[in-house]
Image (tube, rainbow, N blue to C red; front, side, top):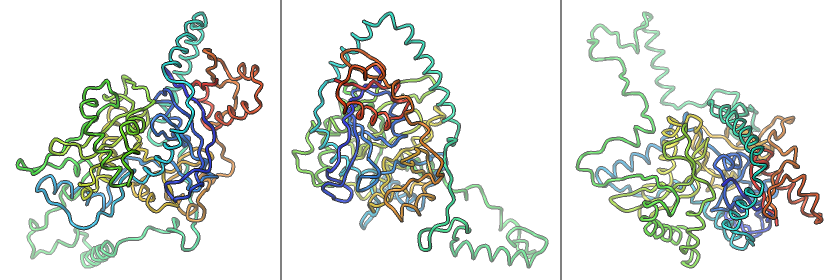
Length: 513
């Protein structure tokens, strides 16, 4: 089945989990009965995000805390000093059982999103979902059977669409996308670093440079590092070995442990499906961990983190599992990345594997192991996992971290995973985060693309081509609107089209009753 969505429209004036405002949040949403991984990829590249089967998009210029989609570029990622500390802390714990003392200052990758998503999910439970997937499936089957004579024409159109989508994938898969915007702006005094000046250097580096220059002046012959003194045997000063090269992320994560290591950590990738035996057998333990996490970290009462909420929120995905010959071995779709320590689950990262990225959905972990900074550790593992998938699927080269909220201090840490980009909320192009920060310091909401002539290239220019599923029949909006008398219906459909863009509006079926 392709993508079938039921647009719910604008929901404004509800609780915000970021700033605590009771009526400040505003977003548009739709219920996804099913969705292809390509459609969801295109939607998140227009600022959408899913919570279970509910897919929502913040109204950026209205909501109290604008949420900018953020992605990291794993192929160029280098772990920071604090990231290395987290990885070393894990290795010491696994090898010797050492437990670091003191408070953990690292923010979990998406724990702060919990409050906001839970707020959205509370809204989802109140929505009137007027049709279920089985009914839709039956209706779609009937509509396809009744239009059997039209099948050949539709197949031609589908093959054309497939060729076009493959062309788009080839363009997007060739390293950096052509529409990555680089805008160099001079910040206002006291508002960030001046990009026109050289970057600041550490005092230690400056001292080393001075020493090197001094030695070069003393020895014009130019022997390396001044270690040419004849009184010193050359063998005492061998050239720098390759071991001085900084370790890669993979080296830091997969560093070998002693045979008598205190603990064993195993990471398992499990498809989100009750038909999968591994997912089914670990469900009870995973659910118990979720309850423990929600109650300890977010102070949720037991009745708000039951099995039904857990299943709808983290085990129910609209994404259709898909395998391609040039895709990753695990395929595309929704997964739980389970972290097993000595035979029990201590953390679960919920991720979506999409054509161009790994998208982080949620993380829950055992609070007893907070000292391991599992949020940061899992994010680094997911960045390394993206790099691993890229080796087989060259187009898959980004790691999406959800939303970046500059006005919310507990969400700004996501900007520390560099290099990273933010999505412009008006033109939907990616802008390096360093070039966005000066503007975000001055205003919560801003158009990140500073080219005044740039427009949304993917906007819906031909709404009549939008696909509608109505009364067991699939038809273009141009036909559907001729039979509609409700004046508000046109405004709703056009709003939907403007948010999903032309491509998705033609591929996805918009259910209307």
